Image 1 (cartoon, rainbow over the protein chains, first blue to last red):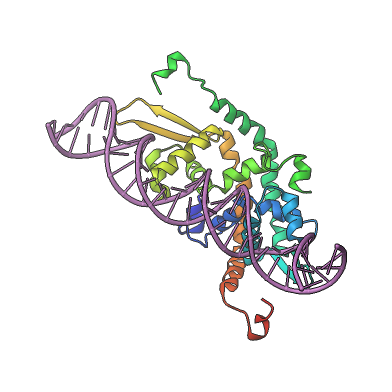
Image 2: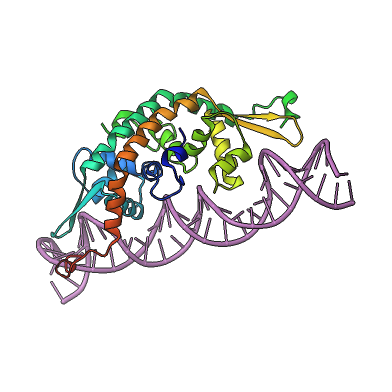
Length: 133
Length: 133
DNA sequence: GTACTCGCTATCCAAAAGATACCTTAGGAA
DNA sequence: TTCCTAAGGTATCTTTTGGATAGCGAGTAC
């Protein structure tokens, strides 16, 4: 049942499937970008403005690795000013399904998590408990 | 269909459900730890050795945030030498389901991703194409 | 007194993420 | 002819995060 048993190898192996996918999906921007591209091809600055808060450097490097992974296609048009369009590949589009499953779990359980987190932040240790810390 | 539309707010809001869950799941160690704890309560060094490669500092901080989120419970036994056990909560256990969905997608598609990635690493630009770079 | 165990901290260092400024190209305005 | 603009980035810091290594505290065994 464990990652190690299923993969029969080192979970840190760069080719461990779950590790590869979690590294991509866990990236702060990947899901957002894939989500935005799901509605059709977009230009660099369209993506940047749609997300808001991402710096060009980080958007560039995230898009580059999405392209490298074959989740996104980059198309350059020889115009002035230059136009570059990014769009999802079939693989990129199929990533939406497992992410949707995660999203459902998230929406069902995040209230509890945030509640736990808030409770945890409080001092919350009574006089009687203090000795056990 | 987008994160923003579904959540009707800022996807970077610390309470955006998908963001909260992706931050947790995308963490390099979380899934591994949850996976290991799935087979029953474990002690600090049991987890550390089972994973192999995690430093105590990082294991401590990861476990702390898992406890804060209510995915894991920490139990201290007043013995010498001290014994501390970590185990999954129901919430922690339920996280396995969406992760399994992701794992399936990973196992089905990682070959293609790794292949794309390798192909991308090669120089691969012909003389004729070089002018367009 | 010395050594040993467990569950951690403390300290330092390197890699990654982020903020800000600037570059390039070519057409159009002044 | 010099400026200006636009798009799609780079270059150069600074800050944050992750990781390596060492050591601590408490009690018990030798």
